[in-house]
Structure formats: C-alpha cells, structure tokens
Length: 72
View 1: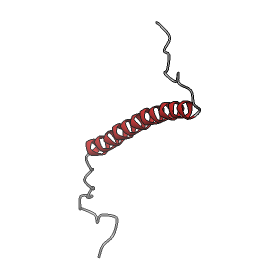
View 2: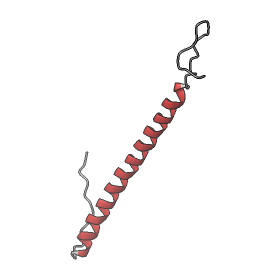
View 3: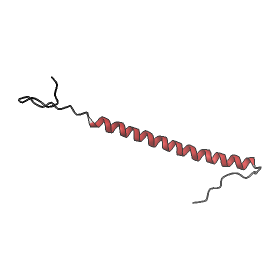
View 4: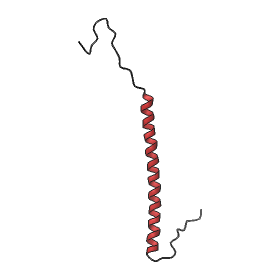
C-alpha cells in the first residue's frame, strides 16, 4: 500500500534537492552565448550596411566614395 503520508512511527522521506549550481551555470552559459551571438550580429549588420552604401555609391558612377572620418 502506497500513501503520501507516512504511517505513525516512520520518518517522513524527503526528496533529494538537485544541485542549484548546475542550473545557474547553464543559464549563465546561455546568456554568454546569446550576448556573443548578438555582438556578432551587430558587427555583421554594420559591416554589411557600410559595404552596401559603398556599392550604391560606386554603382551610381561616383569616383569619390571613400568614407571621410572627422578629425578628433
């Protein structure tokens, strides 16, 4: 007979707790991976945008398409 309550005189059994460090470690690893992927995506989007602007400039027949950066 299996009941959820212990019979008189028996010690209640408790479930072993899972280690919480593994859960946090996995979540932290996932967060780091997400940040890395976001950073790579941001860099790639900026690079592709700059290449697209350069290509548009060259395709319009201009010859002075170099980006001029302001002096600091």
